[in-house]
Length: 87
Length: 385
Image 1 (cartoon, rainbow over the protein chains, first blue to last red):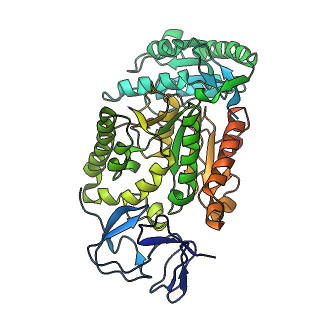
Image 2: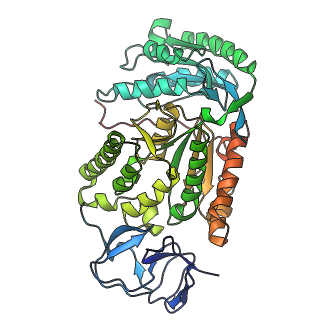
Image 3: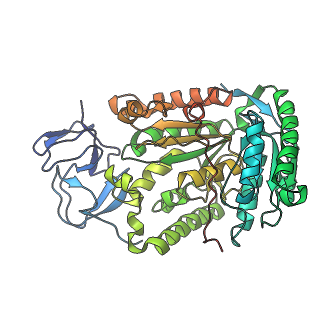
């Protein structure tokens, strides 16, 4: 059973269905699996592939912000590393 | 499943409840309105904190209070004014009376005080209650239904489970000729490009963009640079990082229909179909706006869990996770969290549709069972003077 849901095929983040401790496996609804590199709290976002600094973070197939720094696959994505740009 | 059992009103609308409402035009009349309603079992007082002391909101509050009285779920209404307030009872009652339903008004300063007004009011409301009790439900088409959409205490799953399932319900009601109102303008920030693409013409698209940009402007005036992040702390604990992320989840509730009209706070739409209403993200204030716009039912998704209801409207609570559904079972009507366990959105939507039709025909929601009908919260943009 998956523990991370990916909403749209274009997304580079998924949503954790349970707390996932560093080193444990993220099993995506798309079938992909990889260990997380930091603790991912329940209902928070995890990078499902490497996201380069400045790259758009995508959920619902839409941009929800930009990476402030490089985020590795399995990294926690939240306000500490997601930057919002003025429209 | 194209009909429900409702109460036909003289103006051709259909109520799914049959309330007798007592509406104070100003907070100074709350005590009298409450006493009148208390004396007549079943009467509903629509207490609120406004009606005077402001300038900009006079029209908005008068329109909203009249809209509450005109709501199809109200069989008859008594309006109670103090006398010296800016929102005048006679004017509010005259608006309500245009629907053809029984309506009266009393003014405390003209009646000669609170006791006389209460006594007079009890007599009127008893008469209204007798009339209402004689009304019977009969089959009504779903095209007469207007559903208001709400989300409150969103979490990261609201936009994954509950909101998209409600979106399917919205598409269903629109396909039956009914009306769906998507609101909470602050929760559309960052999505103007998506919503305006769905507008039925350029004029509506421009209005949609106006609603979202005004919401952003207001938020920015209050919060400065924090505006792009503004979501309640509970949302952030729940894993939402930006207002756009929350908004993208929120607008899922509206489904995929085209946007036919944009309306102001408390304003009834003229068109049927998917409507966008410019009202705040604050749940209780936007529910008052939806009720004033004629919605008979609210479908309310929640991730963190909220028990709130509305005095004259049933509110169906859709929990975004099984965790919340079991934690606050007494307050939740539907569990959309089964999507995370492998059920389809369509299955959840089917559950919501079935319950919605039962509720339209008289089944009570958890919020109704729990007596979640506190005061009416009206939006205000300026401090009182």
